[in-house]
Length: 235
Image (cartoon, rainbow, N blue to C red; front, side):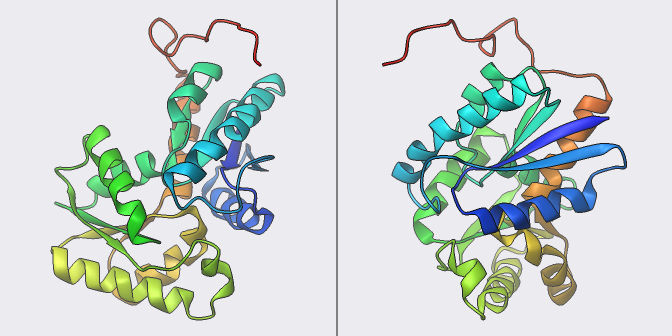
């Protein structure tokens, strides 16, 4: 049996529920998905400050998962907060949803577009695309300018995101769309059906990536920078 902890980097329980549904929908029989809500931080991540505030709680969740025997971890926030530090703490693989979604989309055509929430998050997404070697596939970053929590509360949210995805395909000439927020996970299949193009949910992509790595018996390399950090007193 494989156990994957899927960590919502914000403190909103209802978003964790949606993230859990997305992960469980693709998990293989025998894979246990454990959705985890950040115990400290902010209700939604929409700035560099929010991201920084979320990281201690994310790392605490990874440390707890290690103690409880988790085989791998998904960091379910599109800024992939604390990814490198989490890999130092974890024995098994740790995958961020932006990382997984962009890699998955790169297999679906010549190029993809990213549709995210607020315009101010585009710069971070561009940095991640460059870091992951995906900037040659990424043809554009687009914002629907919906706050993260409005994805759950605005009755027009799915229509707004769908329109943004349709526009992104037309403007960029892309073959696929990456949804740039874990809170969009529940919308993925419906949007894909409406726009007639592949739409990638990072939660599902990251869950399957972790599952595959564990099935192959692969773990995070510990000979270099991802070795366990030295024990130090925290103040």
